[in-house]
Length: 542
Image (cartoon, rainbow, N blue to C red; front, side, top):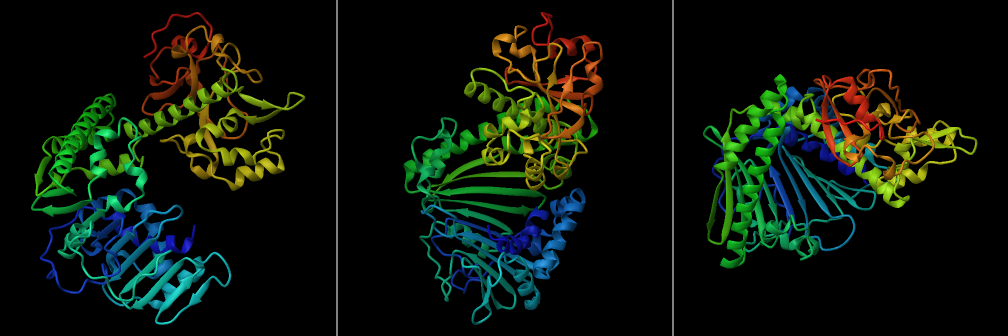
């Protein structure tokens, strides 16, 4: 990937850290020349997004986001300043588009950042040069344009517009407006001053999304993909935030099918929110109670979402109060609270690990991997976590390890140091950071526990039942993820002393692939019973 485009894309930070759009203003006449923010967008673009950063930067969600993610935003602003010499206060608009794409490989991309006043061209050029990956990869062309490597064009010919294109050379003259263009509704909304707009021309995307052999759960919504285009707008009208998704279809029949899909989508969202609330209400921590109130507000808005179908353009509009507690959602989305948000991510990690264990068992004769990869003389080499990498979509990383060498050999230590730990091994809510290369996810070993240091345990050996036997747990003390270091099971000790509890709960992956939250108040006898695989105990696992 070309880091230059990433660097310039940092200008989108203002889009991310902002949020709730403010009220729209009247736009220019339809026949006026396109503004700099829109002049390069081809009528046949597959994807188009536009944000008026000037309006959204000071919005409620923007202010909330900056408070919740102050550290990350500060780092992002420094990167933005280094690459462009800009701050979000300098940016007026941001535009992103993907031209019509029907071919394989890396798609073409266009990005345009407009500024309120002329920017420092020398600083932008210096930032682009610094991010070029190879010597002689930065070439100055004519008229304020620059070629970065072979695929990226940086156009600084306009003193108030930074234009960056990957695998796309825009025409010298702005393309004329095309009323029949699939993304024309989105472009029209942007020209009219709508603060945030996204347009998708489904017919210009790869054909795979319109194939018939899609998963069954996707089929009720597939008529939306058969629409000519979709437009999402965000606006603030009085004291409400309004999100409207509108689909342009070819004919009444397709419009009715898309309208039915929107109804199915609304039902799905309302049902999912109801289920999520039931799970969240099990956690009465202060942060989670705030999140519950937020989800209730969203649920109310979802239930009241209006579905219309005018002029063969089915649409759904969702209106929510502008003063809802967005901070609780942002904390949830970014894992700041240790309530149900962290627990949901934790449980998802455990489910993925459990599935990987089962896939390993299917490949290697119906048995889970041994806790430790051992050498010819019984020397511990690597952890089971390395062995399940191919079943966690980490096969390339797996191939880098030498399985006949210990985890801290010169080669394997270099692999450890030079590659990030798979995110699935990072426990939400703990003090461990990704760069620490440590994980809390461990297995119990020995004295009747499910795992053995050397032998692979078969399903037939789990006589207590897979639904009653612990597969993976979160240990209190993290270990280097490649190191063969796990929890030694001592039936005379209280297992709770070695487990990681967050808000009094520890998520446990069981041998049947299920994940359950067990309380710190659960008796030690119950914990010992679910750790052993063939103890014969009768337990009621919560």
